[in-house]
Length: 213
Image (cartoon, rainbow, N blue to C red):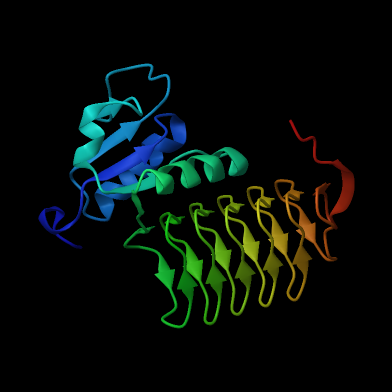
């Protein structure tokens, strides 16, 4: 594990439940200079780290960030806002995660405990690879995707921007999961999923179109 003294000070953008999870991840990765950023903080500190508003002068002391918000679109908006402020996206990969030397994982992505990213796979920026999920060989996960705990993405699968795989979902090899689609918890996906659709069941079937706010 890297020494916290050699790592930059890190902002966690969002002080909610997912923020607490990523605070643990940041500490496991060796970060010690950690603070939260939140537009409407409910407390002055979370997990022993300060919670700052976006206009707080102490923000100047931090150079790197991770957006700790589960909603894909909100996370993407905050990601772009942080980049515009001149902050650099960090990359958090838990020490227990297994990432192939031939895989590529983009900045801003969070890989939690026991994640597996297989040979030749690529994961985009600002993604959540949640506890125990797997992205198998040669799959392509685009930016701002959330793969929930225990989900398995088979080999040579494409998962497009803003898609969300629910807990324990399974995607068979060589399929396409369209932009903004949602895979229900425990779904077994045996066919391509069109963009903007919620699917569920075994085998997974379309339920409804995604409601966009």
